[in-house]
Image (spheres, rainbow, N blue to C red):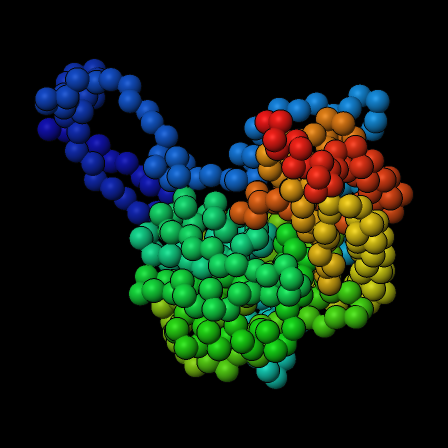
Length: 455
């Protein structure tokens, strides 16, 4: 047996050495044959990949429909505020990144949880007496979606369940199912501006419930919970000893007649992982900068959850270092009028859209209070030729070239979601086309009955 010395890269002054013994068969080195095994190709997709399912993509990709070639396409489906160029980020935000890029100081690896100075900047920005934060309470992530993924992964094991809003952001279910976590859907109430049905929520809790997801302000509803309603939600979580994963990516994106309350500022004992980021308020979703804020004043999470988040963050070694380097500048240099202008545009679009759709027979929009969305109920009994919201929105595309997401994507049939970040003239044109479409297909009570009898 000959000895071969292999050097392995390491850190410090001396690299570690491995003394490896291999079978020498003359001019070649052979590991020998594996007994009882006939080599063959057997490459299969992992179980996690098979369990990963995005309901939005599944529904949208199955909508085999072409828009009306005589009308320009108007897409009100994508929650990306940058698409039409009417909502650019602030010049100070862009300048901050340019300065960091030119400095050449942020081209290497950062700690997996983010640079200490950047965590300090986020903690200082969100710190308040009601919900104090320090740098160790902040985990920087690759966008808010990774923040949600890490929060779910640290709180829930395969076989446990999480409580998810209906209607709600589809990513919660996509991530949970891929991890073998069951999803239990609790109802939101459109007649109460999408407040949570608290009785239904509490009825879903069992010994396997790992966490409650609260999305406020809401995608897809555009709703903003009042302080009193948030306190009611916390009371349920406290009684049932269930931690909260707060998706607050639209935090502070609320209209002037409403107030946003971070749920952690109202909690005295319920531990909360609050997920946020730059994407929506600063209008830079592609920059992939998010964070988890750990609120645990009673030390219920303890070190275990914090250590777990650190270990999980080490899987991809943290978010973009350039944006991290610019983070403190972005948080402190962005002028208040930028936020006000963005919200003014969104509020104006929301009002225009709500007023226009409210005047259309067969539609019942729910007035939003923030975020970038508006939900519209389809009174399906007045559109009997359509089976459901998916078919309704398909025909809206083919006849009017207006694309709205069917709310089946959000587990809430017979509604559709409108994105209100598009330019005002496009909102008005889209609403006009929706009106034309509905007038073409609307059936009164008698007409609907006659159509049903003909089927």
